[in-house]
Image (cartoon, rainbow, N blue to C red; front, top):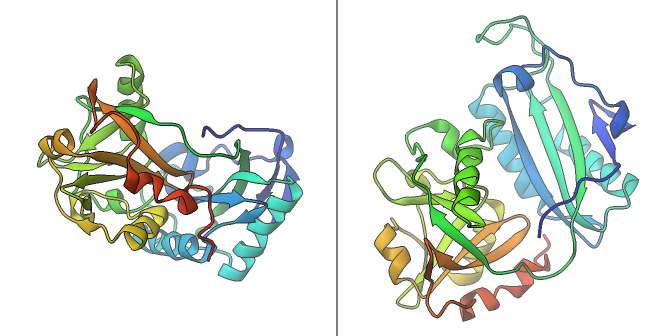
Length: 280
């Protein structure tokens, strides 16, 4: 379910503004260096989902970058609700972005940091995700040794390149292998496979960003974490991807059918998660 940008109200550094009036400084390190992190939260029936889990991960990401978070969890929760209400957003997503803010030109962060915090919104159509196709990316690999593989940093160029490759090869998404040749994740989602009636997902040490929806799917299915090879993808009876937008079945990989080429029973059993009914 693709998200659609629309004329929005945004929350920028403590204020709700028209999106057209919001301004990010030209020397902001998020713009110049990708120095920042973000979270994307699903909104269903006008309610942001899994807020606590997202703020937990945002806090960990900021700590990993030694990036101060200038607002409390309570203030950020209120701001997310404000943006949802201001945009009359029933179904879609919120993006919470934190950058290190304006600074003189240098890779080294300044001694005094003034982070930029932005919350924006996008709408999407309600409903169950459509089956999708994928390819195994040949142009880029996930670096499982980098600490950036475990946080949502502003640098998503691996995913951008893999999406370009997927489009050129006529697929909806791309699956990224790590440097050891095991499956890490898709460009914007975690990967699950069903092998011999076992649900399996790559381990964090394989270069996986521990997704919020990934945790919900693990809880719902009892999935185990284990290395997944390209041959496992070929042998799987089901493959599906999870992110905050839902759980998407993959029916073809590199032109070959996954299982019988249709969404399978494990995916169908996740309907509550797909529609956002698992609400903390």
